[in-house]
Amino acid sequence: MLALLGGKKAVRAEQKDIFTWPIFTAKHEKAMLKVLRSGNISGIDVTKEFEKKYARLLERKYALTAPNGTASILEAMYGLGIGVGDEVIAPSITFWASVVQAYNLGATPVFADIDPETLCIDPADIEKRITERTKAVVVVHYSGMPADMDAIINIAKKHNLKILEDCSHAHGGLYKGRKIGTFGDASVFSLMSGKSFPIGEGGIFFTDDRDIYERVLLFGHYIRHNEIELKTNKPFAGLPCGGCKNRLNQLCSALGLVELDVYPKKIAEIDKAMNYFCDALDEVSGVKPVRPAKNSNSTKAGWYYPVFRYAGDELGGLSLKRFAQAVRAEGSVCNPGFTKPLHLHPLFTKMDVYGHGKPTRTANIDNKVDSKHYFASLPVSESINSYTFVVPWFKKYYSNIIDEHINAYKKVAENYKLLLADDNKQDESGDTVGYTSFFREHADD
Image 1 (cartoon, rainbow, N blue to C red):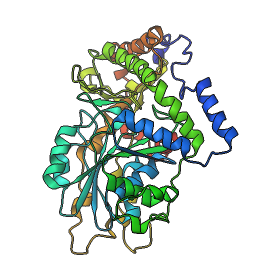
Image 2 (image 1 turned 30 degrees about the vertical axis):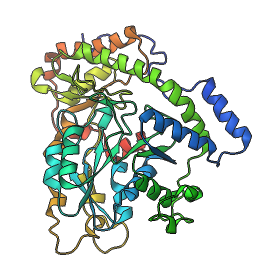
Image 3 (image 1 turned 120 degrees about the horizontal axis):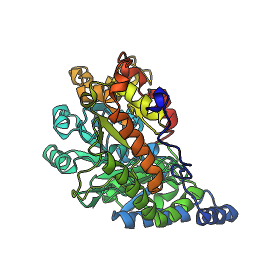
């Protein structure tokens, strides 16, 4: 009998620390205490050590940290030369901090639809959004799923576009054997405590281009302007050209140095646990794990924010809302939807942020430009919350506990007919995660 209908729960074992995150150890504490006792929290020696170590591991030439991922994306955009009148293409399904910073530089976000299988930006739709004003594409490896980088790189080369990789969900992930974060002209990772690579709060930017790196130094790292070598950037050194102070505190840098050592082991266990869960549900009706194909040499690594697709037609048309209620009643995690499309939010449709007298989205575009393509319908993004749901994010491989969560899903799928009689299918989208609750839960990217 289903727990929702009076039966016993499938998940009854003590969950122990299977969902505990972040995981910090005595080594993390020791590293932080060393900085704390040195009185050098606002220095840069530990931070530079962290940057260099991370850059070596990622096999990129240059790295710069910032107080958060949002700041890193803003300065990366500046580094790429994005400015007034430029257009920046980004997926509509992402956290706002992937692209809204373009406003600060006088640029215009242009949203593209997502691929319904990967939930990442759809390369075919990128090409539909390109104009003579397009400067760059923001690629988000959403929920840790690698985007189709082969196709995106070909498009960028064809149209002479810059690529900015937002890797905030995909620390340690691979795309066809190559590390995520090594494809873009610039790449950025959020390091806040909810991410799979947590250091408390922070962001980090990477590039192999010296000019891009120096422009980022100019933007918000005035204390490090002595590193500027190129003649094109030297005349502007001395003051932060973006008016920002993007120095990361060294307590977080100290955590990061330790985390670089322990992270591979952590994500190996997460990956094992999540694939164990997905493998067991692969053939279960109604649920479809969103993960790279087996033998593709692509991985989700830390599996930040794991998502499944729902196929209600395989369960007699049972609504996702009712299915999720039943799974939660069994004691597991099943939350319909995962974020609403940005292109429908008033910030991108009508808000005048800076007093231009018109929506900020079009404020820096020539009046002769037809702006209809800014407000195009994106059908996949607009429907995504009706057939996606968030599943448990296991941090430990405890097979006996995971088995109970697997059984919760199997139990509901196998007994779906018992739920059809009182299934209320009205306004299913109303049960999805809203902007405010989602953004509060996921803090600052």
